[in-house]
Image (tube, rainbow over all chains, first blue to last red; front, side, top):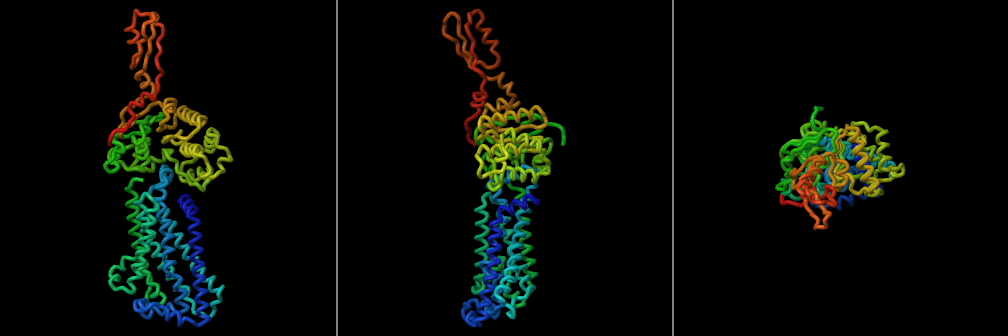
Length: 267
Length: 286
């Protein structure tokens, strides 16, 4: 397993390093911007800029986005951040489709390597990548708060940030499981990754549109992003663990489906 | 591991939807034997090999390697096999040395260092070649690395799909010598496919011919040679027109029929496996 894991990590190193650096840097930029708005005392202007449909849909919690704490926390549920973490997880989870397409599976499985180990490897690496990305996001906030000297500002507490990261990680885990399920039945990596990535974008939009469009609310429950209620976590209204359980459960179901499918298919 | 043939297929069948991959294929390869598995492109050779590796699942029938069922006990079966795919997949960023090391680490089977060195020398893979990335290597060099990775752990069964494709004549010779060595040692069964029939003739004990997914002929090279149709030209001392005829089997009956005539010369075209195999080539609808 370690040999397979190390090889895959080396192959995905540029994506892993690049995305982790991007996410870390993003947190630093967000905190820098928040600190600047705080110093110039212009959060009132930010509140005025919030679209009306957001204010209607999110209620009083929307105003959190016009605070230093809310803006810093926004770095943990910004659409770019959510989708990048999900894409990284899906990129790695779809590796079995690449191995089938390139024929590498013939070399690996001509040896005494259990067939399902390829999936376990990808799932494990996807979760390690998620964990690394989240850890660097956390570090990015810490570095940013030092660089931009946020002493005396209302930084989101570490426990809150960890709750946000746990929920984001569970969301990405769900997408990793979904991508693995797609890859387990695909023979082309591009098909598998594009399908998974486009599905993630559509599901994000679905959850976003549900904020201001009641008709979409009825189906928003199918989106994993629906179970990442970040503003509620920032407001302290909700504990994320129920949502995390749903997301991890969905990831487990998808992974089980992937194992079932991969064990029966021709490679 | 039970005694018995190294490879056995019983009614092995694989359908790709409505297309026949192979159908009711039954054969045995004895331990220590070198078996040539021949057929035109798309005849079902690679499908058969991938079924033995459990990469494909049979629609019907079963196959075993060293007495171990290829599907039900796939891991144990694959532990007996060294495989060279027809189109060798590579990790372009790895050097040849790293590639071989990676593949050996994937396996619980040890790679005897001395044997690996011997293979590297025989296939003329220098230390410089070993340090070059695979994306920079020629097709022939990659093929040599492919043969080495299949044989380096001295597997009881070597399954080689087009092993000499892309090799220069010297390396083809090196491959033949390697197979002869394996045959002499007697502890490795070789199951190979090739379109280079000279290789097959020189290295294989037995061949099987597939066409349209079915085994249409099999036998030892000696049997086939004995039984093959040859063109025989008999010239006569009296200057009469030469007799040109196709003879199957021994020449005795032909010569007996010419008793009493003054024969100047009898020339029989040498046996060519190509001629024998050619009659089985050519597609058939599936």
